[in-house]
Length: 254
Image (tube, rainbow, N blue to C red; front, side, top):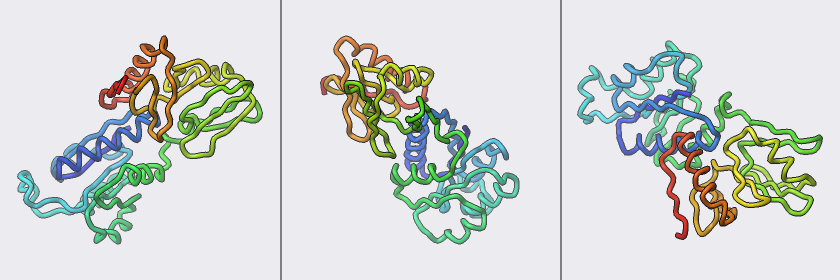
């Protein structure tokens, strides 16, 4: 999936890029982000039909060193109008420090309007609302009584004849099922790893390894058996590399 970003402030652009890649990595979706700091640069790279999403800063700094390349001061809404003249399907999300362009955003059929400073949670909500084909639920059905979204499953553990499944957006489930049955159902989904007997974790949600455990984004901890530590490190590092995120921080013992 290709995403275009028009943001004249490099620090804001870098932060937006990192948060966007983090969001899509949790969904196992590969993205290519094209960041531009000027209108001219953005329009030179933007090709109708190629981008799924365009993040556009409404206010562009007239004092930017390359701004003289643009004949007249151009707002992000002006850029969005040019996009809409040639591309009706690209999702447009405005980013700005003011709500002054709210009315104009409707004119160009913008999908959302994010006011700085943008939090990861707010960005994730905006991207969730797009209903992109690439992030539609990956339904897993096991037998007649268990159905769930693989993207939403954070971790699970076996408890006797039962499985406890913990989700990001829904309540935990406790079902009568063998651990082997769940493993087989998820065998082709490489983001799942078993770090200890009876445990399965979604590597998308791991933030670090600490004191013999996977530490997960929502605060949970999943144990790693001593003899599985090397495999756990390798599995997580490999998955992060595959998801095109920055190298993980392996903090065993911290």
